[in-house]
Image (cartoon, rainbow, N blue to C red; front, top):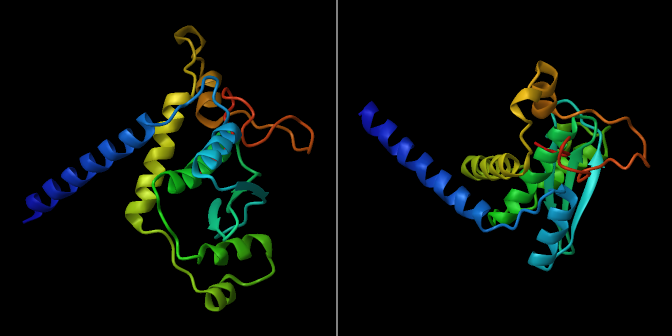
Length: 196
């Protein structure tokens, strides 16, 4: 019985990998890769605006939220994290759009908790209702975001793989805060900016 369950899970994982690889294979991933440009191209392809909204991370709230409104898709993402994490957050939320996932609008509860930090999460959830994407949809979005990142992240030359270089590739290089630093959700591929 347990062996049958493992075989079913393994088949399911293989199907998910194949599906996600097909999704990513169909994308035009420019080199160098810029996350904001990629999301602008996705918005143009879908014929629907996507707005990127930087927010401060808060405990017990997601690092990224996709909110679909009648006029646009809004991606709220944490700005007080590493550029690579920001890039992953943005790509994860964009992957929900790429994969055709639909939330029933209850992501507004999470967005309200981020944008209006004084509101208790329980109150927001009670007022707006709170459901999230299904677990398989979250796995799919996470895998698509990871596959995109693996394809667009430049690999350092073997001789440059010092411990510091490995850590920088893994975590990105933090950029100083400021509105006009030239940094942001899509600024370049070396340090990577943004997602989950």
